[in-house]
Length: 171
Image 1 (tube, rainbow, N blue to C red):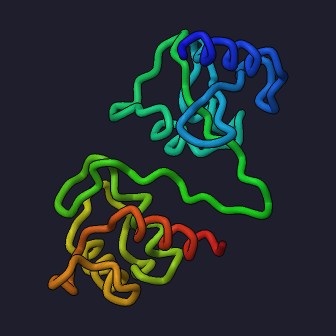
Image 2: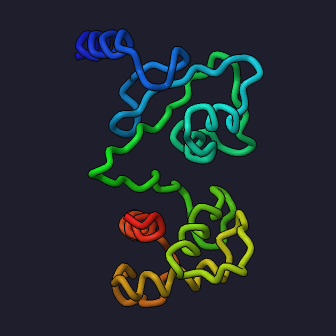
């Protein structure tokens, strides 16, 4: 089976990708993803800007955690562009939970604000604090996403994340 993977990978790498000479196609975490090989002096923000991907999404897809350090030669997973006819929410932030600050809750808070579930005056924070929990609980109640017997469930699950992102992104 590994010979087949190697053959497919070699074939994919031989085809030009839209990311320029720095990236090549590879079987990443999502359909249409590619890889980028970090060069000396690169930073996630610069790579993201060059490739048209937010650096946070790039870090998450590449499983890079705080303090977001990258090294020359490291391969990053670059999420693919989605075709106009379909929508795919950004990847669910593994480990996101009430009372925690890693991974950062800022993406969740921004989506809650964009979808109208969190007051815009609430500052973005890494912490999944009480205001975020209250907004998530209201969202879960409205969309019947809470855990059985817990209508005030402050945990955002994968289904909730996907639905919230669709609403926030207007899809």
